[in-house]
Length: 96
Image 1 (cartoon, helix red, strand yellow):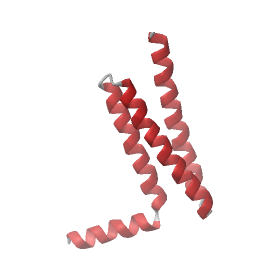
Image 2: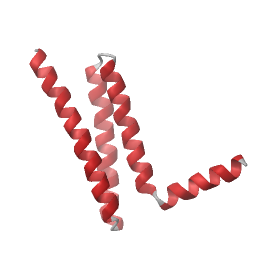
Image 3: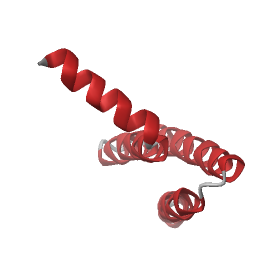
Image 4: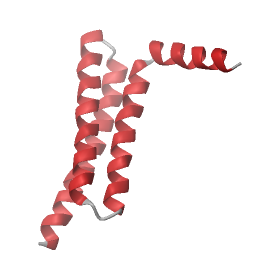
C-alpha cells in the first residue's frame, strides 16, 4: 500500500513538476511568514528570498520546456511573493 502510494506521488510530481516547484516555493515563503510572526525580520526576508529564487528557477524552466500555463501560474506566485517582501521592507522602513 505504502509503496503504491509513493509511486503514485512520484508519478504525479514527475508529470506535473510545476506543481511541485510552486509548492516548494510556497513552503519557503510560509517559513518566512512564520519567521516574521516570530519578529525575526532578517530571517523572514531570507526565507522569502529563497522562495523567490525557487519560483524564478521554476519560471525559467517552464519557458525552456514551453509550458506556458505553468509559467503564468509561476508568475502569479512570484508577484505575490515579491509583493509580500516589499510590504515587509516598507513596514520596516516606517518603524525606523
